[in-house]
Image 1 (cartoon, helix red, strand yellow):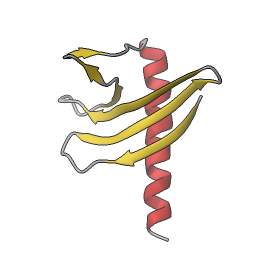
Image 2: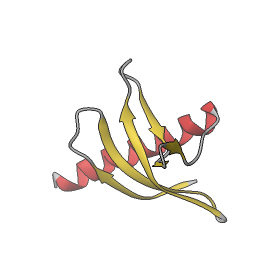
Image 3: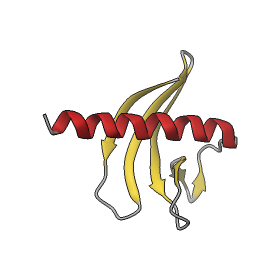
Length: 81
């Protein structure tokens, strides 16, 4: 798995939009990295017609979330150089 792109957002809960390559055959675009009401950060799929486009098992959701947080922190570091 690798992060293809991450775009920081300015909302209070929405942290970034993320494009991820799960395998060489599966890519997901515009996932939302969001801080939930309980304060935990988690990845969410985009919506279409008011429904989730995808759902994630907690293990893969955690892996994507951790990779996205690392990418977001790396981009913050790059902008401060």
